[in-house]
Figure (spheres, helix red, strand yellow):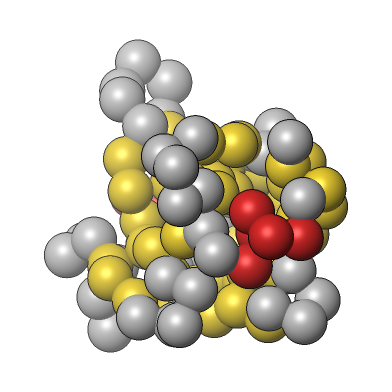
Length: 118
């Protein structure tokens, strides 16, 4: 079993930056060999993928954040970060950390609110 704890959300003006962090604890094997990612959800909408990173740091991004967001992971610390730049009001959402194990099992964090507003 893996536990995920997010931090770093908050209020930022359009054009600003925020960095989200997610700390994973539990099975070191599961964490090290799992895909990690960030999703976001707006009330009334489905949760959507923002970015994912594989155990060997291959990344993929939603088209809406390409060129603005950067996902990274530190396998030694069992963390995954999301650097968000040039933020737009439409980036406002609750952001969730996710781990998908090699067997397909998924773990989720509790979510952190990101609000982009002037």
